Image 1 (cartoon, rainbow, N blue to C red):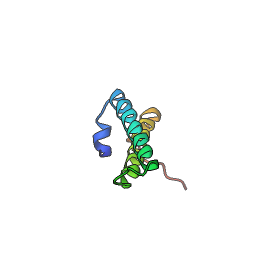
Image 2 (cartoon, one colour):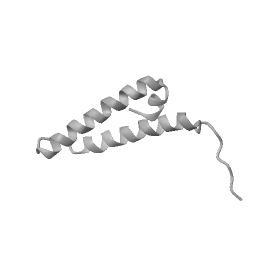
Image 3 (spheres, one colour):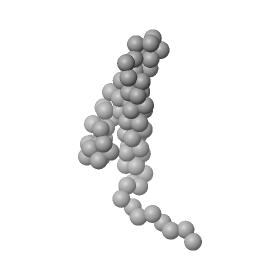
Image 4 (cartoon, rainbow, N blue to C red):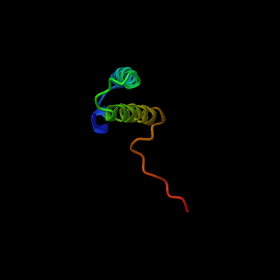
Length: 73
């Protein structure tokens, strides 16, 4: 899922999506440990999805999204 799609979700929807993705990541890791994982790249995709959701949630907490960067002189 793209970041723009995630940003359109509410906080509750993001929390639910995060829980589902973490559960999926656990399942993928378990399959990897038992040598039953067909596509190893799915683990990396799930990790990135978790990081993407956490980043958006953190941006909302701090109110960072949409502010102009400050210039350091």
